[in-house]
Figure 1 (cartoon, rainbow, N blue to C red):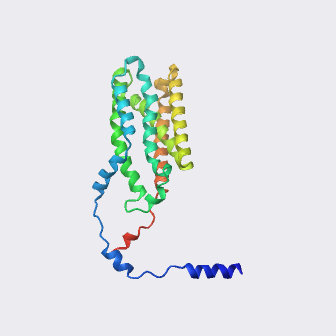
Figure 2 (cartoon, rainbow, N blue to C red):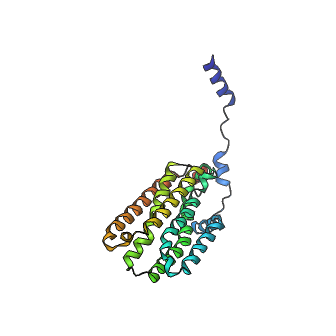
Figure 3 (tube, rainbow, N blue to C red):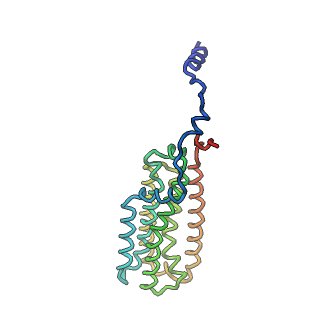
Length: 236
């Protein structure tokens, strides 16, 4: 009886076949938008506090006194954190499924925001490298490794967390990872052996591992946001 009732309900509520569907889709007006226009359109979606924190870090690095230059590598993980949280906004606001099925899908949205976040982070990283180079006696290779490794490690670990946890739990996990990297880096800086030249190979391995993990986790993150079919793509 239940099976018969289920079939009866299915027959009763089955929608009718669409009439003139192809003609309707063919005559539906579409707003032409290039990817460049879409890229500019995504700029206002980067929250103001992201730009504010980046400008604040830039100013701190610019006026950093000689005795406090070692704080720069410990502050850069927070630059990574604000960028990662921007990428997780769709999931936190429960808009991911809707954005997956739009004309410019979620993967393209994230790539556009990554472009602007990269432009936002690049001057800060450059100022950090310049300040450490000016205030320390390290060579160029050491400066690059000492400054970028905590940043890359935070990016790798945060993306790994986002691929495991979704929503606000992922954001809290990223914040915890950022604090751990920053505090650990600050603690190890008090050890004289931490910056010895014979330890440079370990820094290089850590930087390469972090960079490779970041790329891998970013690929996995974007893979999960692949587009769903959009009906208007069927228009000839």
